[in-house]
Amino acid sequence: MQIGKRKIGPDQPPFIIAELSGNHNQQLDLALNMVEEAARAGADAIKLQTFTADSMTLDVDKPGFVIAEQDSLWAGEKLHSLYHKAATPYDWHQILFDKARELGMQAFSSPFDEQAVDFLDSLDVPCFKIASFELTDLPLIKAAALKGKPLILSTGMATLAEIEEAVNTARKAGCKDIILLKCTSTYPAEASNTNLLTIPHLRDAFGVTVGLSDHTAGIGAAVASVALGAQVIEKHFVLDRSAGGVDAAFSLEPDELAVLVTETRRAWQALGQVRYGGSEAEAKAKQYRRSIYVAKDIHAGEKLGPDNLRIVRPAFGLAPKHWEQVQGKIAKQDLPKGTPLNWEFIA
Image (cartoon, rainbow, N blue to C red; front, top):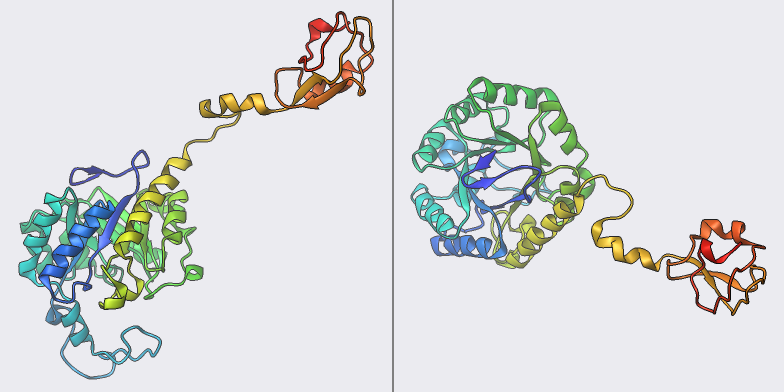
């Protein structure tokens, strides 16, 4: 499949998405700088989130509308105020998308309601991304799928049955290009709770392209995911974690994003294919295997044995497996020390 001009598939390096989320802190100049730094780091795409506080929740203080979990990054925060701080203004979208395209990246967003789908479609986004918490919003998935563009679905928290419902909804609406991202919906996520082995299972269960939406610290999980078939990797992005941002704690800084791009590409290149016997690049190295050599001068008619033969490097003599066969044989000719032993020299 393709997202914009970028091909996605096993014969292509991983497609790296820099998620800006709300780390722009409501500053357009900062957001534009983030786009520039993501491009400099080598990301293939930037992604926004398209919502307003009012489209996400109600402005009330009742139970459920305030984050009660004390171990949350946003403990005590009212949902409405949190989403207000994290929202990317609608009138920024075109500006940020144009900047990304100018720098050679793809640019798209996660819509959180059907009006956002229509808005993003009017900006000619190359695909839509459905966030993990919206995976059960089948009307939203249908609305996005009806636009006839690739659909990326994060699967955090979802049961296999819920993923199946989402995929079937998208397919019934005509979406042919679906990407499922393994995701752990904790912020930050622990490596021990990431369960990357789910990635190939998702691919085989649904016959789709797969990847990872990664909320762990660092790049280890993302690099490992490539070995398990991940072709798309999404990481949250921030210019400076110490400066704050709603998702800063589990976001990569520019230098880290650059390393992610490099190392996931290396991991993809290293996959290769099933192969034994050495590659062409290893051909010259075979000379440094061991073989049987004359270890001291041998005269014609003399017996061969451990006192005048040794198994050493390089590999231009008889292979070590012939050691027992040559013991007690007779030299046909003088053999100076350092001669690689060959069958024509012995009787």
